[in-house]
Image (cartoon, rainbow, N blue to C red; front, side, top):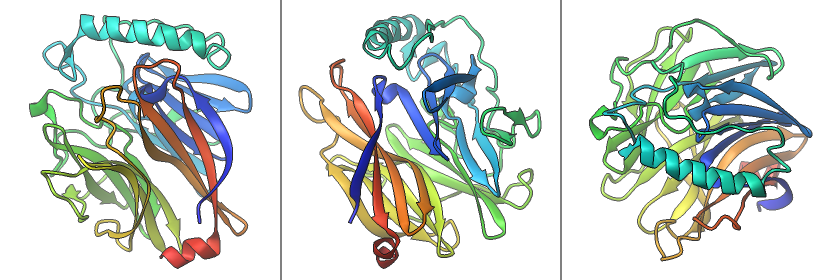
Length: 326
C-alpha cells in the first residue's frame, strides 16, 4: 500500500534535527546550534540563527503563499535546559556535533558553528507568525507572539522545568478556521497535543486537549503533520508507548475529535535495549500530485553510534488506496 519511492536525504544529525518538506524545499532546524536552514537542490541557505525559532520552525503553504510558526518560552529555567546544567549540555553537544560534522561535512559545507551557552536567544516569548512569498525570504506578520503561555487554557510545562512550545507546532487552514496544534507536556515524560482555532490568526479560542485515544499512564503523542483530503483533516501523529513506536494516521472533520485509521512503521520503543539502536519514524511532509499521495518520513536512529545515520525516505501511495483508508 505504501511503497518506497526514493531516499530523499541522509541525515548525520539524527535526533538533533527536525525537517519539513514543501515544494521540493527542505527546511531543517538544528536546535543544537540554534539555527534553521533551507536546502533547495544542492544550495543551502541559513534562515535564522541565535533564535528560538530554530527549535520548532514549522512552515506550511496556503493559497500559493508560505507561512510559518515558531518560537519558545521558558527556554532557560534555573539555568538549565531540560534539567541539564549548561556546562554539561555544552560539552555533550560540542563533542557529539563535532563528530557528526566531520562525517556530514559534504552536507554541512561551510556551516561552522559552535554551541554557545552564553548567547541570548531571540523569539523566546511564545509562538510567532511569519510569512513568505517564496519560502526563502521571511518576515514577521506581527512583532509580538500570537500565542503565549498566558493564552487561555494553555497547558504549560514550566512546572517540569522544560520549554514550552517544544517540538513542532502545526498550523493549518481548514474549512473556515486556522487550527493550531501544540505539544502539551502534561506530566513528567507524558506528552499530549493541545488545540486552538482562530478566524484571523490573532484571536484564539481556549486551548483544549485533542479528543484522541489517550491513556496518561501509557501514551505519548508528539506533533502531527496535517493534510486536508476530501474535506477531511488527516493527521500523521508521531506516537510511542512502553510497547511500541509508530505513526498513527487519524482523521477528523472538526480538528478536535479524531478517529484512528491505521498504524504504520511500528517499531520497538527506542528506549529499550542496551545499545539503544532503535528506530523511530515521523512524517515531515505530505502532498498530492496527480493520482498519487507522497509521504516523506524521517527514519531516525536514537543511538550514540555516530556511524548510524538517519534518513528521509519518500513513499508513495495511490489516491485510490488512500481513499479506501478513509
